[in-house]
Image (cartoon, rainbow, N blue to C red; front, side, top):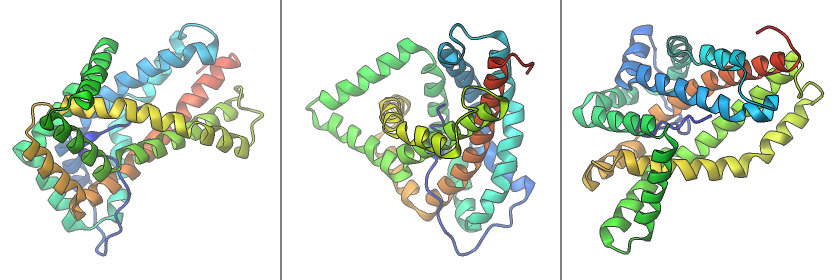
Length: 282
């Protein structure tokens, strides 16, 4: 399940000396500035599409209607926003209030909002397999182009990924989600019922290399496509923000909130899949 966020990138938690006294209003304002309602709507579509892709492995055939409906309910954007906000409230207590205020101010600027708009448009477009293939080919062309401008753009995209720790943090979240999925399967009597916790951990760890490769394979073309209308100077400014205490603090807070929400959703998917496997109503 993709949790790639881009400009409000999931990253490592930044330890800060002055914790936030977060309020529901502050949580809502931050989520609104980051266009979370639109993000969660696209994530819902991604989840339903992903559920259809894994159905043959889980059920030996096409996606059952109950499976699709269960996943759609788990990723309902309104429900997900409530879960995200609930996770964001304690997560914000790990960060410095001034840093988060600076991050909020950054994404309330025209360039901050434009970056989010571009990311969301690209992410939605990549739901189409043909668009995704074209984006990957375009990124490959950039890498193969000997012109300095192409090399510079590729380097800036790499610096964004490094500054926001997008690959490692998304791999971590995916592994946590997969472990939660196995837990749900086991609890509901699915094929993971006989697995021990150690078995589940070993299975998830065995997926790490593939998850990292798949994440990179999708992430770089996505960012290159999303940021194509932006200038190199725009990207340099964003890299500087991402490396700043404000950017790092925001990344850490979002990682905690998304990770908690994603694990709960994944466990719910495991429960639903397991119940379908044993013929229970979901």
